[in-house]
Length: 419
Image (cartoon, rainbow, N blue to C red; front, side, top):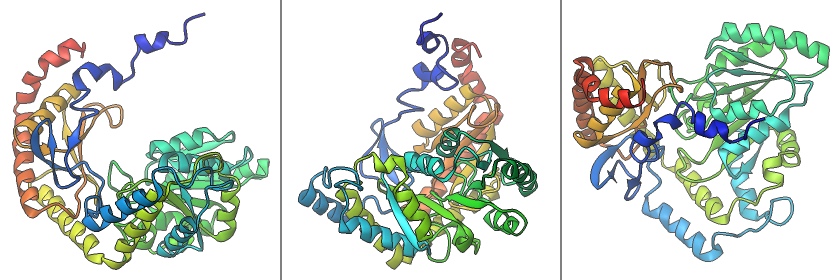
């Protein structure tokens, strides 16, 4: 028998093994100053492309005024207790009603956090006799929610409708044996690739197969669709999404999340969603703040228009310079390059120190070995000057990557890590 913690010292994991080289700079970095297009990193101003404040609400005076007033009136604790016991207010109900109306659903239910909220929703929606079929590239919160399921689950290839149909055939045969049902899960927007889920094609399969559809639209809410109601609205199938999920952490620049569906489904979740039944109610600071943010989404379409002006300028600029940005059809802007993890470290350090550009770096095991993904999040606060500077910087780092400069710089790091 071994000590449970032996593996912690023997194998720190694919990311943890880089901690001594990466922590504080490549991971767990500290961005300082007001949330905006330009912030400070290690004492220097940088153009920030890694903040999910799509509509630029985070630092607006009218937003901060409401947040501050709510804090002064209620403090950080009110209301105390879970919603079912003592943490329910008229403001919570009002926010739910307005959210439901905004995403064109009959009813909605607030969640404290997106990650634990969707995990708990998956757990509540299925029993051991039910089968889950989900996109293999789903976010970690979905994968963790599926892991809670005591029944069968199948993955389908990313955005591959033929693969989904094959798995629906398998799931249908199994459900006929167990007497259960089928839950299909996709994302409205896949946060790494920037691709919309093929919701229209998935919905079309309802004519042939019996299943319910849960969509995580964290990145689509507020950014896609004529009114900002998300990927379902963008694709004309919002009514066919059985359970719609989104967070406040992206377009709303806040804390919290929600589920929206027919009233009967939401009523069921209210009494069976364990992450909410046994957790403190969302504090009033966030509830009143979300009401103000939602009002701005509804009444100021120019925020989304400015966002998309920047998205188009950045993505078109990258494509014109020959960069591979994959198949993104959303605000999320991935830039794919070829290189090792040590080369990626040297590249990003050059980008931050010499070009004053800060964006997120993604490497193996999130993406295949040999690839470097620089994920960029345009916002309404960015300027065309920011975009021009960034395009020039990306051209410079690509040249250094291709001519072996970063390989030479990273050799010492690679040797130290035994790579």
